[in-house]
Length: 520
Image (cartoon, rainbow, N blue to C red):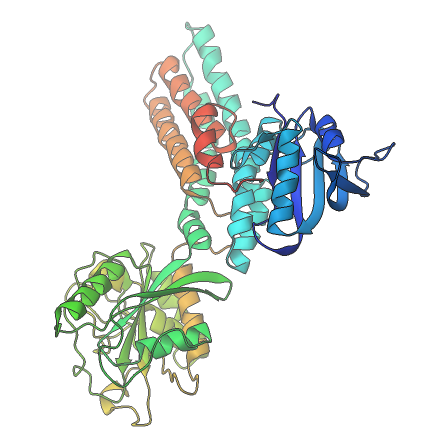
């Protein structure tokens, strides 16, 4: 495959100021010579103004051509880039001319795949290219740049370098079977394995944040009809996305948009109000609401602060989610699903009266499922939340009470952990944003705190590594035969090799690079 010369349009399809057509491979320069009128002396890494010639010699376009001589190029091969006018037709004609001149149409991600195969980057860096392109927030961009810089690859390589001496010791005992591994030597080897296990576990802990940074935290706005859910969506988005009406039941389907909150991508989902359905269409809308709650990372429950607590009770939802035990704030209520230690949430709201503690209190307060949701010593029962959410989802909740001209009912006055929000004046919105960030932080270290956020493939490889190292550690403790210990350690090394693509590469290359754009 590397013997072919490939070509693709590297910029997005559509009209633009310029377009870039990229050629890579051993015949890149001869192909360019047939399609362009090249200068007599084509200097590498220097822009040259050249015309593109059709088969009959007529000019198709004129633009800047650059030659990157391998291996000092993105792919490690000879690369030609033509920067021409960004029209759809003219760019396609330039591509057709290069195909007719001997290049082959590139497969999705083939340029980056060649960069990996030619040693220009490891597999984690290749994956980071698409993470960088798809980044929807500043934290996601930062994490992608760290990964593109080789942060994950360096961690995996460093762990391999820690493990290899342990394997060398074990294999020395295989070569000299008359000697047993002494307890002192075994203890030293176990300590080295423990160091690697700790590093791997820290990386695994970033996987949930990696998912959020890459795909966004699915944030469902829920509650009874006509309590201000769509108004809150519009305020958070900054534009009128959902129809707002005093008529209850206006929202029948889900509405989804992406925003950033303190650099974190959120997938906001506005839903139909939860109540006994009045007709078949509303029943379908409520079923979709319940499905969204089942998928939610964070749930923002909206309650009308002018009504008594209990007036807007909604049906028991079915989702098996995770939430924070109590969250109450005048306006709306949010619930975040995560599986971490809830103590970090309670710390965020442990200072009553402060701005951060109010936000955090909203973040962690999920007064739903009171009979089963765990209570913290510094939190008290509240009746603010109307959703009966399961304990797991209840550990990650924020309640916000939607204020109106009618004022706030006395039932809510004692809810010190709740966040008052007005969708008219914008009061409380920043506190809500702070609370959302605090709840998301309970899923693991944010990119601002930890430069690496691994993906699902990395997580699976690191988990295989830790499984095998635990097995090797146990075998050392029980003085098993060194052959069995060495086998487990080799498997751990293989798992780390999978992270950066050092071993068993073929089985994962096609899956990874098939997600890339053509021309990347």
